[in-house]
Image 1: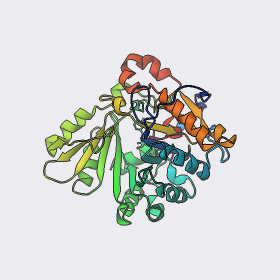
Image 2 (image 1 turned 30 degrees about the vertical axis):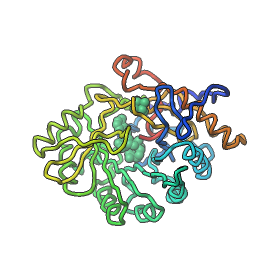
Image 3 (image 1 turned 120 degrees about the vertical axis):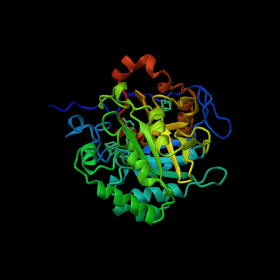
Length: 367
Ligand code: SAM
Ligand code: SF4
Ligand code: SF4
């Protein structure tokens, strides 16, 4: 099969030069009244896995669109942008990708970001999402750099299925060892992300819940999403979270918990016998757009107002063109102030069209 070139940045929009900036003195506020609190930064578009729901092999093999070192933001550029965001209300930064642990010296970036303070002098909450493949080697350095929260993606505990899912025969044991290392070096919060797909792991997802029950590790089950254009998403392949809740509670009774903070993506549940917490991220069946406070910064320095965006705004051009921090802040404020995105709430109305939209790939902006 021939490879198709993936349009990783579908449309680049010019930064608006005029327009109102809606800032309430603490946060930028979008056109639906949502504050910008949360920034996701993709530090690489490359990955050593080829998960079918994200970077299917036939579409990403020898992909000529992977970016060169000079095209991606440097750590200094990421740090400068992060400072601007934090001084305008961002409280959380998640590093993702691609596979963020493939970016050389990622711990140096984490160290820099961990020292950022909000205007109230609070530390910024820095988290990282990883496939876990390099965690055994990297966990100690990440911890030393100040990383407090890590999420590892793990969709099955069956060794053969795991190798099939990552599609590069990466052994399950090495990822499990990585998770153990993250716990043993003392990274305070370790979570697991499980994407559940019909016919793939909908019969075995409970094994992961069982494995981590009774530990501090929180497992979160994610509905398979129609991100990008390469993963051949079909509604029939989505397993609604309510189905998972039913299966888990028939074996281990659970009850819902209040969110930790407004806009929390995962709906939290706890085991009634006190053996811990699990979560469900139900972007398809229970959209949470009304609370969505996230902006995404792609590896090549564009900001995207939604995970399902078809256009990004080029901050790299401003950074490298000599813009001041104030000018960049003003530009981001204008971009956020016009934000009306709520794709998951209107997905069903636009599904036919939506699936054909030139959406950005998840590997370029992160989950
Ligand atoms: N490579 C890292 C990893 O896998 O954790 C970070 C990037 S990955 C794009 C971030 C998260 O997105 C992972 O937890 C992954 O399972 C999830 N993800 C990727 N494609 C998805 C899809 N189509 N639907 C739901 N989640 C998806
Ligand atoms: Fe790589 Fe993560 Fe995408 Fe899998 S989900 S292909 S590990 S970026
Ligand atoms: Fe946020 Fe877009 Fe997801 Fe809605 S669809 S929750 S606006 S990222």
